[in-house]
Image (cartoon, rainbow, N blue to C red; front, side, top):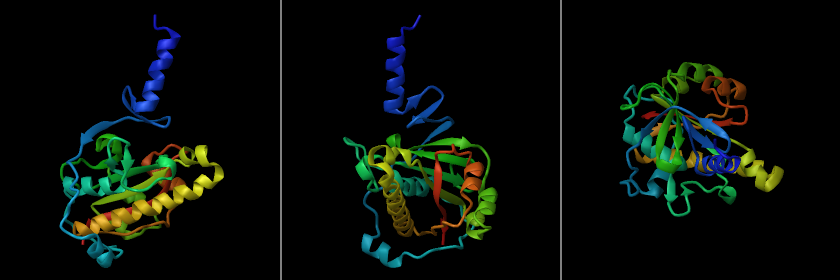
Length: 231
């Protein structure tokens, strides 16, 4: 018979490390599904930051060409990838390193990925497949029928859990979460430009509808929808 002390220790390990039988636990949320390792991100690209800033534009029309897994990997790394392994700092600044954001990839045409919805796992630069069907049309309907959401080969959804930050900073923490969303959105924009891809930040959508489409827990709030594809 397992002692209560041992059981409590195991639970603490699961919570602190993020590993849980059958899935990945993040701040009390268990994400179960198939794990896919991503290609290593490039950290010294061909386009300068200055050129990427200069050329960045909102793109709403995309070629029918599928994204590559390398491109998807690079975009996700730019959003929340680990950039300081000993301290687990990420690509975008976060108040108190509370990291409230969750990044989802809605894959319609991504080489090497089956259609579905994937959650990005920064700790090991991987994806967890949380839904196994193409949700772009449903997402399009909840985003006031903006065609770029339906037509892009992939869509990045930035969501977050306010409690991760407000637990430390109180109600002011909500402002910090919104700030962080902006940091991540710009990172994605600039990374997309450097890869010859386009994107646009969409904030006009039905929050609860997006939660239903992506099967998000109530505490995971969607902030940005970013269609992604080749210009």
